[in-house]
Image (cartoon, rainbow, N blue to C red):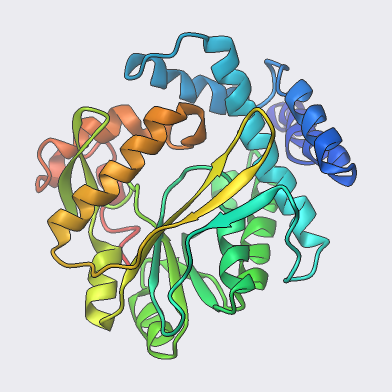
Length: 314
C-alpha cells in the first residue's frame, strides 16, 4: 500500500462512512442538526467545496462560508440517504420527505433529472408509486479509483441500492440503447440525467442558454423517448437547508418533441434551480469546460477531453 493511499484512506473513511453514518441512526431533527454541525468542518468534502467555488464567478453569493456549508451538507445527506435506504424496505418513506406532483398512472416514461439535490428519493418515489425503472449510468470502473478504493466501494454500493429500489439492473453506457428500448416496451420506465456536458457526452449536444451563458444539453434521452413513443417526465429533489426537509418534485409529462424546445424548457428548469440554490448542483466542476466545449458544438477537436468521444452514448 503506497503512501498516498495511506494518507487518503482516513479522510475517505470519515467522509464516506463515519460522518454520514453515525447520525443516521438518530431521530431526523437531531440527525440533521448533527449534519449541519459537521458541515462546518472545512476539511470535509474539500474537493466538492473547491469545485463549488466556481459558482461565485457566475452567480451572486453573498456569504461564501454559508454557501460552502450548504455544499458539505448536501454531500453528507446524499451519502447518509444511502446508509438509511439500505437498511429499509422498499416501501419506507420518512416524514421529512414529501412529494409534489404525480407520475403518469399507466405506461412507461422517461424520467429526466439533473445532478441536483439528493436523487435517491426520486428512485424511491417511483417505486413507491408502483413503477419499476431502469437507471442509466456511466460505467463505474474500479481501475479509475485505484487510489481511492473506499470511493469505488461507495459508488458500487450506491448503484446496487439504486438497482434494488428500481427493481431492474443498472443500464450502463455506452451500448445501453437496446436495453432501454426493451425496458420501455415492457412498461418499465427509464431514469436518466440530462445535464451532461460535451466533455462526457459529445453526441447529440444541442445549444441552450444556462445561467446566462451559451451551454448545451444532449438529446439522447429525448431520442429514446421519441423512438419508444413515450413521454418524458422532469423530476428533481429539493432540499430545505434550514430544516433538512426534502421535496420530490414531479413535473408534467410531455412529449419529447420538438427536441430544441424541450431542451430549452429543461435548461430553464435547471437554471431556476441552480440560481435559487447554487449549493444544490453537484456539477460545478464541469462548468468552465462545459461552456468552452459548447461553443463549437459539432467540432470534436474543441472538446476539452477528445478521448471521451462517444463514451457515454446511449
